Image (cartoon, rainbow, N blue to C red; front, side):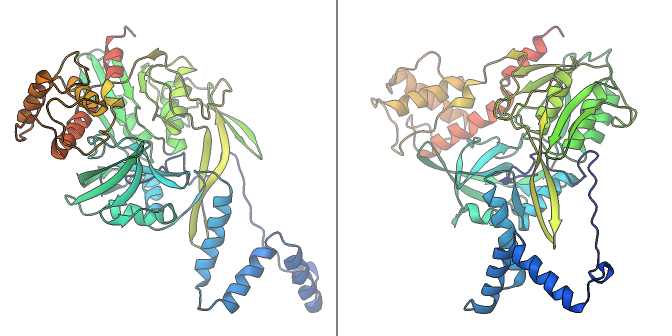
Length: 473
């Protein structure tokens, strides 16, 4: 999905589970030989002994006695939402409004106008789950784990996530101001909305390497990847790198099809375990649509590589068709399915998935073949105070300032915690380079520009990619 919304990628899918047959049988009571009197007795018995009897009782009490009229659908939706919430599962929830649209966008590969934030609900808070690559949010100081507090003047509530999504999205080219919280520090970021493709598969070449970036798996990903792989000339670019850093997942079926392009027929891609069945899903000519490639990619991963992207990665690595570079992945080992009841759409966890070797990576993730430290820019803190920083000042905020200046190349080995002359000259150089008043002091405008510039550089400063390019693989 999903720009500024929950992480609905989670392996949501509108297809049936593998080999799972669901049959609805409608049988009239008359056909069972139950007469008119017996019918009412039977229905009364069913109502009294039904597990939903208390729910039905409350429904009719509210319909009859609540001080104002309530639409039936409101109560029905509330009951469904309550049952899903009781599961205490962040991936099982009712889909309404924009949130429903977002999930369907993942399944359909749609585009939208937003800033590139994917959200989730955790501990009663709306949190940034991941950022869409090359989006306005990814180029800002926003990071996964930040809590969203306000959208312009709108107070964010986990009970109205669809409204939060609608507020963050908007007309292409318009601006939105987000108030966020990280480590008890509240800050604001103003971003310009842009048109974002739901599944961004991009390709470029660097030296003798083809680099394919998949930001999310949706219904177009397998088709797009096949078309891209067919265009690769192994003589000119013998190395293939697939970048799944910050890929939050998506549609499981597309991830499996993509994996089948690389894995020989008959080899296990994934093990699927629901309450009703255990199944081993194998690579096949049918699953791959008759297409195979002999290319062995290097896959880039990090802590935000999750769900369907972990399925794809594990399938290739454990079948010795790829190696990985980066950091340990997120660790999401469950599968969700989208369903509909009385025009109410929802998704809920239906199974867990295991790697080809039978490992459940939930909350553990996949360790990289080659570990590479993330860019130092990825772990920079926010400034703790709103005080203008100037010469002679000392403290933690000065250390943070010097870390930004070092990460951006304006200072070298100078984490003293003292705003001295060398730090001042570095600030002036940064301000001049970014068309700011060269005062040598750091006010909130300079802080915001430090955040923004660091975010932009982080997009291009990719240690995992550098390592992959250097590998003889």
